[in-house]
Image 1 (cartoon, helix red, strand yellow):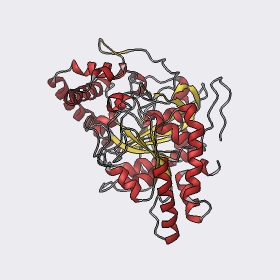
Image 2: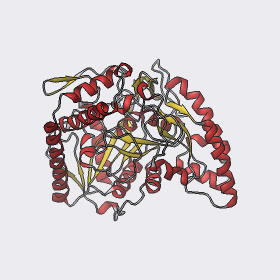
Image 3: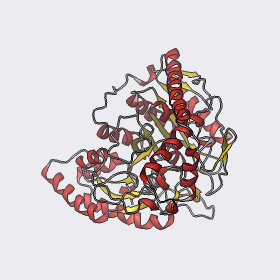
Image 4: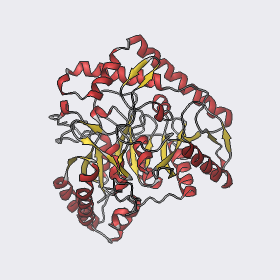
Length: 465
């Protein structure tokens, strides 16, 4: 268990020093997965046989002195991501027989550096919602309290990292899908600038929204994986951290924020100020972008569903509701939403320019993880919508719509004994600066990134494993 509580960077150091072999680390990880999976349900597909062969090869490569940067490290990928020759259902019964013939380029980059994929993680149907529940895989739960959601759509990925099923998982974020579960499960989640990490080959929908990115237990690990994955990205590392003005906003002028989250965020800002950061209270001056996101996401999903001839009898209620909602929009509605994305991008550019900054700090989410099934139908304008994704994720949509990098890091435990999270958003291309600032704030907060033992459902205190 000791090795499983290490971060990815620390595990790689242990592998390099010979303290543990890739085979042994993998077997410990698989044993942990078998222990945790029945309780939290984060695994969609086990790849143990494939992984065991890869671990033996990794030990040979280390012995020969030619290891890759991730040689022997057990990791997971999301059920929505293509791995040639293995099922890729994306949480959907209608895709239960789909097996891609190609591998996503991001996964190829991970394996080229010696990472060992031992499982695919759960997601909701088509990765459409901010909680992880599907007719295909059932309910995935939060390791801090199994009666609570882990978030979504990369929910199984966050649970895996938080509870010791590998120290890294490749997530996907089209509307907060990395940052929501990272925030709810107390791990780091980094959504890079749009296009910084290769996504294709992949499912065709949400091509202008989704980014792949690392989910880890430390920002240093997120940076390591970003360096492996950002093939051809021209982002430049920033200068000294303290010379960068930091903009902060408690609520962006519109987002609902619980009192404990607001207090923790203000405390984090004060820690930064006392440590020498130059801080400015401001925001882009925009209303919530949920309408723009919802039109973009649901119209695009419905359009691709029509082209794919899905058997609607196999779709779950949430997916049906999402696709039905998308059918109400016209092509003109969609084009207007795309035009408004340019407005959002310009407002962020203007905000950064007026302060000579490239960084905005906000809460990631305005609440702690809520009980399973507790989010009620909400409205966009006068129209009810049945997917649980809206107000409580208000801080997240702009980064997807404008292609901005954003990193979620833990910022403490709230009144309900669950993680709260802080978000660092950057201007387009400022990925390394975002990670640099995130790592500095992480050190100030002092979060314990050890793995989480599975908390009992009776409300007993959670323990660090």
